[in-house]
Length: 186
Image 1: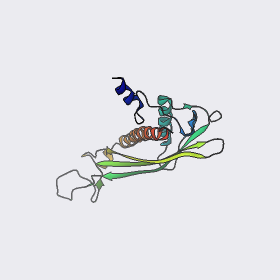
Image 2 (image 1 turned 180 degrees about the horizontal axis):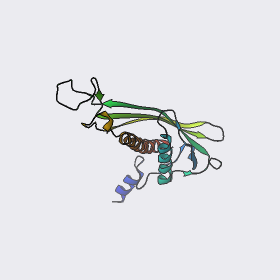
Image 3 (image 1 turned 90 degrees about the horizontal axis):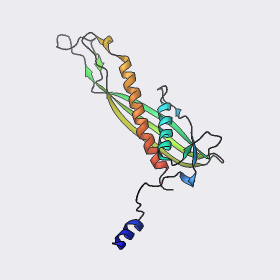
Image 4 (image 1 turned 60 degrees about the horizontal axis):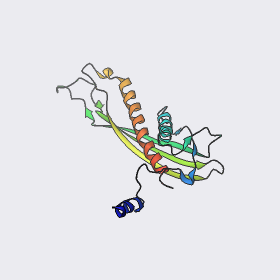
């Protein structure tokens, strides 16, 4: 019985309980800069910065402090945001059944959003990059519906709200992954 316990606790990197996470170089005070947004989506940087700060607060791998007290800083750049219509439908030709829309109208039934983000960890004292990675993720969301009354019945606030909600969801997922990769047993 004692032999089994020894095998389980001393085996190949096997640990019981919470895995110890830390930043490269064992730094414990980090500053998360506001992400840079290179896209045309205003405000997309805020959910990314907040999500990464949340991950550090949750994990306790490092304490998020102001830049003057930090040993290292996280620099994030939202490099790309691509939104494409999916499920395109054309308006029915004259005389065909369906909603009346101008001839040649094409309506998207859903959108696919793809985000690309680069995250770096830089030592403040000499500006050396200690860790860097790029992340890509995507999400789909339904397009606002065009009703029988005409094209002006689409709710533009729905589309903006759905886009923002998907950016926040992707930011949370991507920054969780960034945090986990950044703090892997260095």
